[in-house]
Image 1 (spheres, helix red, strand yellow):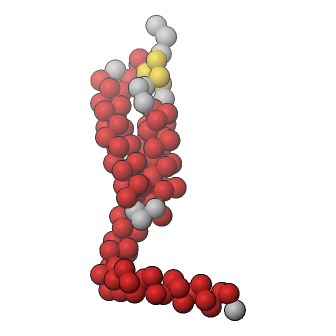
Image 2 (image 1 turned 135 degrees about the vertical axis):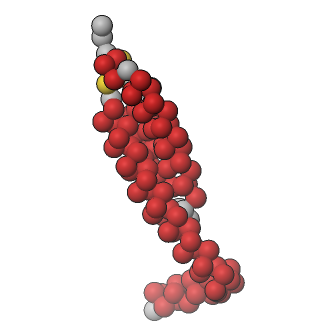
Image 3 (image 1 turned 60 degrees about the vertical axis):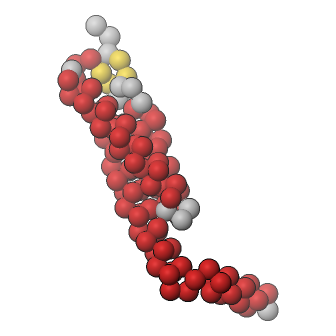
Length: 107
């Protein structure tokens, strides 16, 4: 019998990569991609462990899961840092700092 590719194995890998790439978008997008990748990886792992002789692509699932965990950690750190900066300086303070930096680079 011919082996089938695990459902969503490539999508899990792509979402894992996207969770790392988008972790700098205030942490929100990276968290979303990472959590979705972890949920899909859990389902794919259950399917694979039920009958491993029928499926291929488990390497993509494992790699995507690891990347998703890394992306979630980086996104959570980015989100926490953004919340702390906003709590300390406020939105007006951040805007003033960015205007000062813009003036400094113009000169």
